[in-house]
Length: 142
Image 1 (spheres, helix red, strand yellow):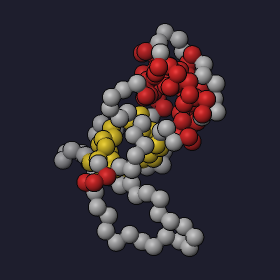
Image 2: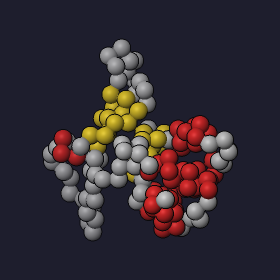
Image 3: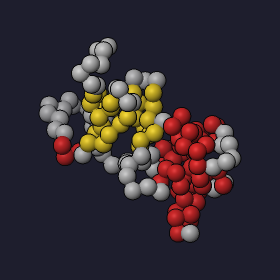
């Protein structure tokens, strides 16, 4: 029951009502030991497997975007047309496997960026996130 209150609090702080469907989305996203990388399509399939009831894509999009806006999820864009979300919101990096289309976390301490550029006037570098694209040796190079 404690987790349900936590999910309701996340939903309310994100500015959306804690409906049964949104609570299910929260449970799928945040009731796990490991980081969860997903696309909206992945999440939709997982929801369909988890419950007998259909959840509209609009509800899924709105819930995910509200969580992202509040900092509960991180957005990672791949090639501009493929967007992943990450439940690990700390500063860290990723491998993107082009064969399986999966993201894997890389600890922030394992990547060193040398020669950082000076940010524009009145701006500061908030974070640096590196995406390493990997593929098998027999994968056709684009």
